[in-house]
Length: 475
Image (cartoon, rainbow, N blue to C red; front, side):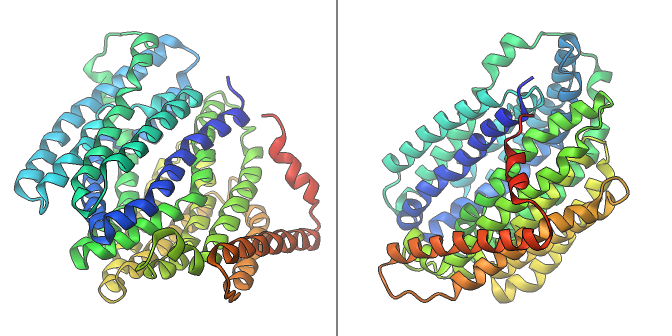
């Protein structure tokens, strides 16, 4: 079994490549395609994502957990995999057929919708849940890096002007297909073919459907923002929101990496009756708050200078989007630890489902009220309030099982330090070269954040050396 440290490193690579490659291509794409072109892609991609969730149901969590609990027994592992995948494949055929009907009968832009339909098809073959369950993070990371780099090169080579929106959609679609197909050679070689009865498939339906309610709810406030913006406002507003999300996902990538690693390990420990995972939750919260608060408030602080430099002219709207959207990553980070290290490993699926349903409800209501008046900024406010409501309910639900008060006390110094950094850096008015201004702002931000953090830790009578060393202990 790989250590949590090595798994986390590989998972970080996996997540950061997903974030960093778009960050390299985004300044180019935003200038070449413009907000309208990006909006066409983003709207149709969001629709394809909504169809795809009906293929994967709750498999990314359920499949991961089920595989992790039987990974020591090859016979059980093989049977578990094939019985779950048969369900996924059946749903994939039904949903892909439905998506084609949508493209030909309902889609406003049929060609982009068809091209991004490759994302829907690729979901039929998406078995990342198996690799995460058996903790094969190295393979996933290396594969992801190579495919993402080739994809990025293709974008620079074939997307040259606003007329190349279709090329952009085609390249993205092919990337999804290649990514998922590349998973299968290992599976066909290492997972035994076993006889599967209908009852083996059916037994996975109910728990998947329970978690699927969560998937629907999460996707409502993750993707419906852009769908509602496209329907109620314009493709340009969708473009602003899409471009802002690409940068805003940076602070959540490391937290996602942590959750991806800890879910199979926590599920494995829970299946073995070993509850030592509880001791890791406090450490994980500190880690999550350190990275989410420092990066989120840091990006907010430099947004006035960073956005014109990064996106080009005409994207001033994104400054307000950064400020209303980035706080959501802090709530997401805290909830991610609770969810992946306690709720899901201990089969508290109903709690997870209800919390996501609350978040979806809050998001839709706020979007309906604010999008007509504030456009993409209203959608950003809806997302942040949704993440807060999810975080609050999940944390409240485990108050009798883990020491929630202590977790919150541990998190507060990091959030306050981030707020102090934001207040100081955002108020700076440097009338110098933009590169020099951003460099100075980052330097001041780093010094301010860690000075405030060390001061707060001292007031709270915590040893900063112990807080740092715990991240390097072998697990």
